[in-house]
Image (cartoon, rainbow, N blue to C red; front, side):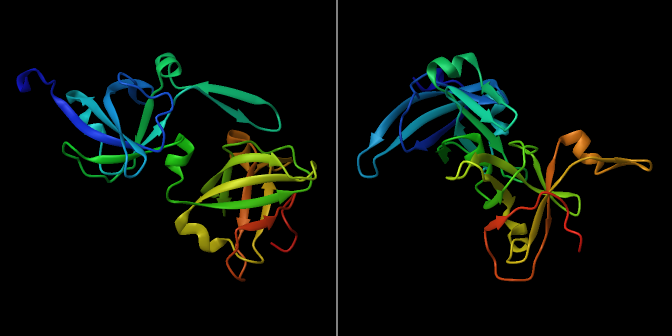
Length: 238
């Protein structure tokens, strides 16, 4: 009966696989439940799942045409060279499968029947307008996932993954950088680790005390490239 239909925003999410999503799976905003999946079907032509979703009326303004939805089901494990941390979005999403969303500033409000894609993770949702840069280091234990990537002290990206190369000694840092800064990454670009420097005049690189070690980028002038050999410290010529 139409009059029994709760007030709110009704929209469709499109996912490559159903995974642990089901009718009743929560939709979360900053870990708070604001809606749920109310049904789904497989679209035979595309092989994708279309999920009918509902956001409660008091929260509908949180969704805009710049919103990005992502899978928060289960447990996410973050690794660094110092250790591992584990994060789960909510107990309910751990059990039933859940969907989170972020809304990029500047979006417009949406009406019913809007369609959105579901990304595999928050990291994937955030990186839609990012460029991936790969930097190899021979010896550094000072970097963590989430560390800042700076140019002249201003953040232009983050480290989103750290792993060993095939030789098991070289460390690969994968950076996600805002697309507008992609032109900084050219042949000849220098990338090095910055850490706190303490001397009689005080502390240099103060932001690294607050945020941990970071990477500094000094743009080169060659052809655009996405792979680099990192430096352990600031080069003398800069």
